[in-house]
Image (cartoon, rainbow, N blue to C red; front, side, top):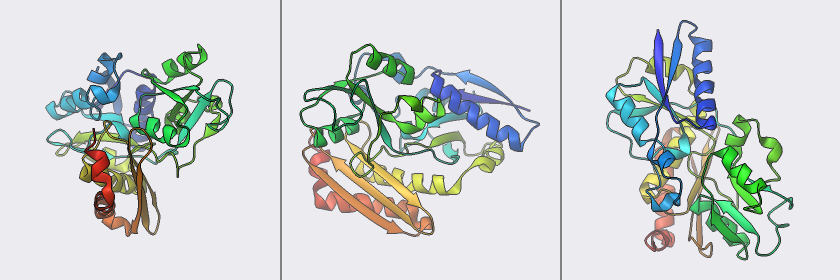
Length: 301
């Protein structure tokens, strides 16, 4: 039986698709796979900041629509790219064990954020990372940085930036961890919702879900559900600096943050509870932030 997988064409997207197909094939050797590359809006518009062209969903919408139509059997995404409101008829069917959730610094000469010279040029496409960097180093000049992982590193090496910030998980999957100069602290650089996780999306009524469920890592998906409930209640995406991450064991703890784009205002929350209450924990954390004034930051576009 051959299954069609929808994905973007970047090296990271194809690597993640290969990871998923390999995991499934290890459990179901009779299956084979065909990869269908689908160009998304985010891939087509490369000369504008993500927040100005739509934010969440830019890198998945066309692919998810192909899943819903039945053009492909399932799709593989970076979880942080998946909007909280999915295309009708599809669901996150599985998420394998999460890679590290943190951000990292890649610098040409400095070895850490603290060592960057005053006025250094920092590259990122993320409003969240921009705000968090400015909260600790308001002297930095933060410039927009688009492109795939390899393109971003090339632009850094060409001297267009003094340093860039990226997710550690993608670098690990691509075997590029040697470029990392500093693991950024989670208490300052609270990651994007879903960062480090892979989303496998399929139609709710699809027969392939029995294969996909076999590669699901329950703790990862539970944590992601809490983070996505947090983001959904806040109504945010790429347009507002919002971060959250979970730790899941006997209990589930979630740390969330809303930060102003200039990094000067920050409201944080930590909630804990039973893993089976993941979505409630996420929603309650968001409610606490809203009561503490996060709505003022969120509405100050």
